[in-house]
Length: 286
Ligand code: HH2
Image (cartoon, rainbow, N blue to C red):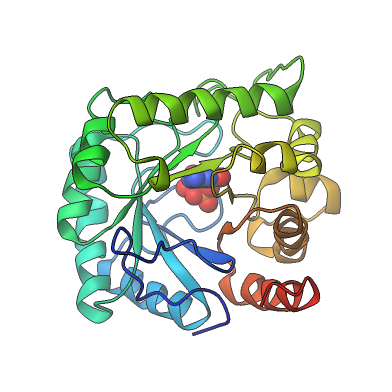
């Protein structure tokens, strides 16, 4: 286990999974088409093995997703999505009973099946807009939920994203989605917000959000940042191969941590965990 939060803390049972230190959320895409690791972890045993590697490298949470939301991606059916994630969640829990797992879905039936299988957090990139039943599933489970900002839909969101003031608009959106969640029975303490790096945003929009992340942190909810290996990093560094964008990703993690984000959804767990351990020591947040 690295220096980040232990994976055995049970969400909703006293200790929140996002306190007190930074938390690395290891990405596990059980998809054939994710932008950087598509096809690697379709087999549940391979997926569980990768989850174990990420937990040992310092991940506090494993985020399991069964549908790519990369720009231009097509949705899969709910049944197919659940068929991908449920056996993987079961395999991870069988191997590591204390593992904290989030399910990356905007569909309530997939979330419910994943929670039954042992997941304990819902990561909803639609911020409860994608499925009218999602809020009640989350409220009923009493589990944490990640509410992410997205402009448009994955299929077309990168065609011409526009904002007057991206930071203010993202902040206002996240506040209104958090208020909606609370109004539908989700506990305030179970809300995590995420500016949605790369979801309907140009390079400049992504950079503005990272630069002024304090505006999102000021909402008072734990903030998750998911910049890992994304295209804007490649456009700055010139690194075309997504899997090789680790150094640029680490820069986003450390800067976002300094600005108050506490959860970091990443592919390269060891690199980001070690960077956060050093950042934490320098900032005296140990
Ligand atoms: N990014 C992706 C997927 N899920 N969830 C949150 N909360 N925040 C993010 O930034 C985020 C997310 C896209 O990245 P990835 O899972 O690596 O790729 P794909 O969507 O192609 O599976």
